[in-house]
Every structure is written in structure tokens, then in C-alpha cells.
Image 1: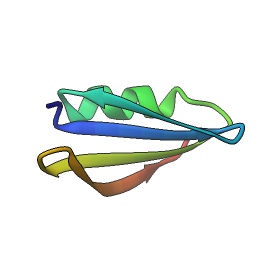
Image 2: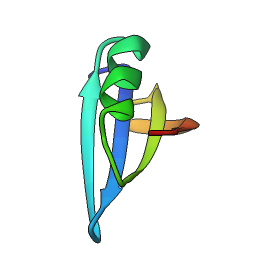
Image 3: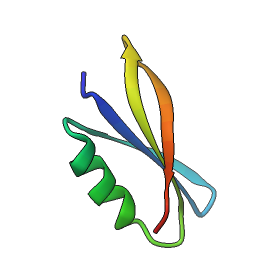
Image 4: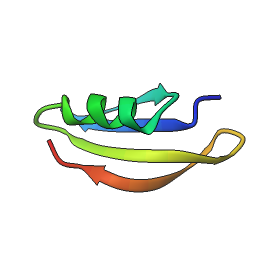
Length: 56
């Protein structure tokens, strides 16, 4: 299980992307234009908690 997840909401679609490091996740999140992006961190088996929104 990856420690970080980025959720992207764009054009009425929701996608999830998983990363090993916070830096990788933030870099990916910032590259998503015209979308709502959230950074999450694993707290338990397949359960993630929102850490922040990512401005892009």
C-alpha cells in the first residue's frame, strides 16, 4: 500500500493516484490543471485521511 494518495476531480470524474512520497504526490497534484485536487495520507489499511487541498 502506498502512503500517499492524490484524488483529482475534473470534468465530473474522480480519479485516484498513489505515491510513495509526499513530494511525488504534491508534484503530481500541482500538475493537474483546472481540477480540484486533494492530498491524502494512509492511516490504516486502504483508509486515507485528507491532509490538504493542492492549489494548481
